[in-house]
Image (cartoon, rainbow, N blue to C red; front, side, top):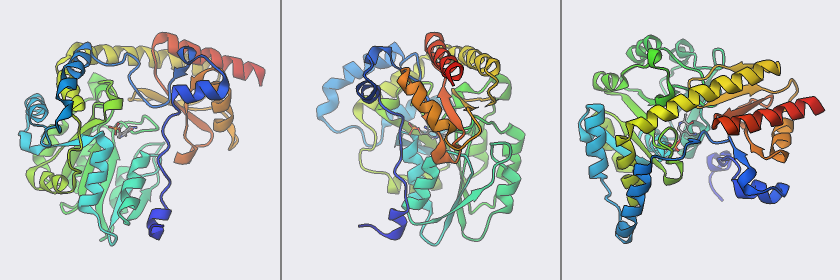
Length: 366
Ligand code: PMP
């Protein structure tokens, strides 16, 4: 079944669920530490939890297909008109919408090597050609991306910070890139990890959305807001682009519970500050342990760290199994072309300590 281009797609592989690992390795689920999917180890804001419970009663009816209340709140927070916002079933949905709206099988979508795997799926899912541009030090090489543009290129994905590498592009490089991309090519600036960027490096991408009619900024409630299971994301773009995104948006793509939780979570600024602080402390804790073990890692502006765990092509898989046996779920990245590396999400201090102990144990034994 399916056209050749559908057969060519590799299904998305998510982090292993705790219950599955518990069963497979005969472990107590409570003792398993999951550091595989860049979730928030603090959970969600208590305000979001309350809003979900309150919204349960409304869940017999369909959700608001236009997400009116949430878009109003986002608009006022971001200082853009509500009409510039598109809600997504997670921000992955936005990435898929951009590909559906903007690419045909005669076009090409571009992204960097070692960037988020959903770009590949979104581009392949519409039968378009992908243009994968070699990285620069594990991050995006923006000049090389500009140089790789062809008449077929219609959509470019850039993640900042990038997953799975955690690399970051400074504002001036991004702005220079946006100025040089021909205006008929759309750019998705994927800011799934924007809340984790250190203050000195932050920039105002909403000003860029106002300046560039070909820009879509996508963001998510899955990471710092701790709502990954509810699948809520959004895109911000000028009206002409927003219009086409909404034409290909699935009916009722965001749920009543998700909209209510996101709306409540937006207000809890103290929770996001806490998530930021816990992430910075956790990064320092993990980085110190990697250094002590002599492991190379990539400094990250996300809530995860990519660490090189060995020199052979099985190193990532081997350590991943060793960690699973010790009750720690990390993320292999061989599907990203990084078989010598593992991506470890930053947890609470205790979770990081469990992960570090398992790493020490493994390297001491091997
Ligand atoms: N973009 C990037 C760079 C990501 O890492 C992720 C999550 N892994 C997403 C988008 C999508 O997340 P969600 O669909 O949960 O919003």
